[in-house]
Length: 340
Image (cartoon, rainbow, N blue to C red; front, side, top):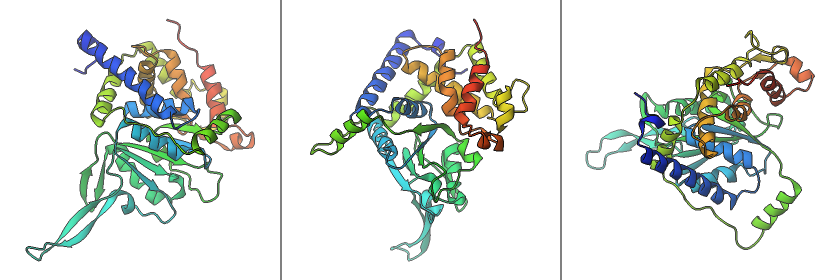
């Protein structure tokens, strides 16, 4: 039997929820010492971490994508490594490789595995779409199975393990679109846009002086694992779960529930993994909003960042200059919210 809120002792439950909410508030406070604005981006990155998901951050160069990930890793008290993806990066540069070493006592040569940067809690895959698909695929097993295989031997990665990947818009020179199978492993595709003028002025004040603030650790790896367990205990009413199912099914052009805009502009929609991710993310959002249950608003708020990289636009959308966000927004409006 799975553990839920109803099966926990009330005092224990209250203590864990209060600790979660206090830690989340302090994490945001520390991140705010370094990162200006981007409220939705920070919330979505934290939600991904609280549910054990990976996050893809899309934005132009110079919009603080790398700084955001490094700051979050520091604040969570987790080990952090960074890989700069380049066109000549090899899969073994990520996973690690076996080398031949000579035993000084026996003189025999033995294979020794040297861990790659993937053996960490938070892996920053910087500019992941700057490297060819073969190397991008080296992350697939790690993201899904939390392990990697080298020369037939399987190695388990540390817990928790997150991939926070940054990518430049695919219109830029020298980028390779991520394959659909890998995109589907990311919980969110977070869009990081330019800041308003006043916030850019604040960035200048914070970063061009003598003293530059740093974030401080708030949690530990063990606490993050406990938070992930707590998030999964949040109850979801059947009507809310059905609403999440309805939203995802409406993204599939072949489904009878798909609205006309989906049938016109999408080649294919999202899979059942998207439904799972929407429900999990909604649970984390509910706790962050100091609620003990998932609402329809949680589902609606999580839908677009979870679905935008899981639907494929067709040539009609390109010719009419329709974006995935526009299509999804109109799709969500067409799916009625159940009335309890």
